[in-house]
Amino acid sequence: MMYSVYQIDLPEHPQAVVFVNGFLARNRLGFFWMWKNLNRIKNATTKAPGCVQVKAGICGANEVIMLSYWHSEHDLKQFFRGEPHRQMMQFVRKNPNALCLYNETYHPLHSGKYSHEPQGMAMLYASLAR
Image (tube, rainbow, N blue to C red; front, side, top):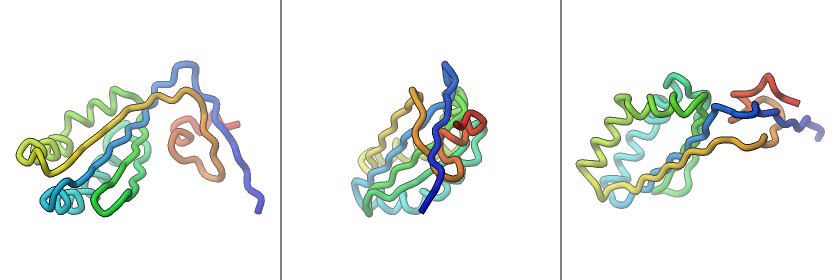
């Protein structure tokens, strides 16, 4: 099977960020809350200004990870000030032992490799494909 593999030329100082957000249910309450709210969280993130794409993956029955690609760190920080994030934090404050949450933010240093349609960082810088 033949397919095209390509990379993108990132700007010298890219504004884009990748946000890794993990949810680990620590008890039954966290488990049910996570699975009840996961789709809502994904949809709210996808619709947020500055968000380009969201990918979600199941690590196990009690753990889910989301990757989101943002035009800028400013856009991501604005999302943190919004209602969907506030609702999640309200649950966490009320039930501090229900979930283990983790998140990390990454700034791209160089292009990944892509095939076919753009995904992830290639969606942000598709015009720079080579």
